[in-house]
Amino acid sequence: MNKIKVLVVDDSALIRNLMSKIINSQQDMETIATAPDPFIARDQIKKFNPDVITLDIEMPKMDGIEFLEKIMRLRPTPVLMVSTLTERGTDVTFRALELGAVDFVTKPKLDISQGMIDYANEITDKIRAAHAARYRLNRLPAKPPAGTASSQVDPVTGLVVPAQAGKALPVNNALGNRFAATEKLVLIGSSTGGTEALRVILEQLPKDSPAILITQHMPAGFTKSFADRLNQVCDITVKEATHGERILPGHAYIAPGDKHLMLGRNGANYICQLSDSEPVNRHRPSVEVLFKSGQEVSPRNIVGIMLTGMGKDGAQAMADMKKAGAYNICQDEASSVVFGMPREAIALGAADEVVSLNQIAKRLLEHLSKIGGRSAVRI
Image (cartoon, rainbow, N blue to C red):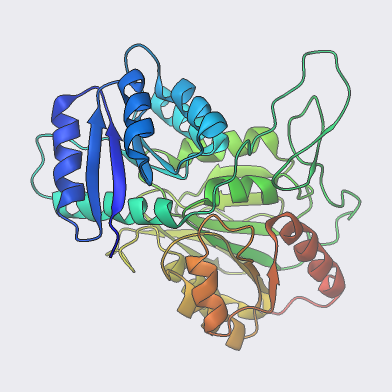
């Protein structure tokens, strides 16, 4: 078996050593080189042609974002960012994902022993996902100079991007208030590549869309910043979910990075429920937990969507949701960064449709329009 060749780029010798030990402990990967800065990394890339690069965001001489841009332009390679849990760290991390990084991990703490096994599992899983990924360059179109009015077309999604807004036009912004009085809900699960996939979908939805609950595999401390970034570019309101809050149309609720998100009921209202219970499929939040709650609470009112991600989290619960009456859409292989989670759901018969990323919002709204006039199902 050919091992995954990994280049570790970090200005800390201790971090380089720790990351190398974690990688070399796996049978299917190896650290082929390390570099303390982007200039040495550039030479190592030419010499060793790595399969995956782990890249520290903050480094001397050239920061990780500038180096990432050069990598994706000159020698596209799967990149896993290593981020600090700070306000600047989170903002720069999401910019890196927009530029084409496959995923990110938080920087390990050198003084921890308990929990290191979980961290090692996380980073090696993400290296495997990066190696398996389909890479998308220039995901976020550059904004034109101020004063220009021409639109652009995103080279990956094919969506029209207004020059001033820098986001995709809603696929249908004349739906009136059709869904506001119904009990329709959308549940979305995603992992590797999901941050950009979610942006593509949510940017296209009109203000009167049904409520959306989202589980995206993401560490604690990043989900609020992620929700805030999406909220700035979407017509719907996007926020990090809080326990017990009422679920409202025109809102998307993202599971916090260290808690499971579940659909609940309080009388006639839907509510968000959060849980600190054990990880499921090695994840907390888990897509399986979210979809299972949908199947138990109100499956006939739900559209389930499975987006790009490695593994099988949520696949079985999505199949159970469909059997109970939900309508499900899975992202197709060609547009997925990693096709694992959609593939597993499709294999279990969970999908009513398999759709390209740039068509998911359109098909979602078409389906909801078709059933929008029906009476809400009461539980």
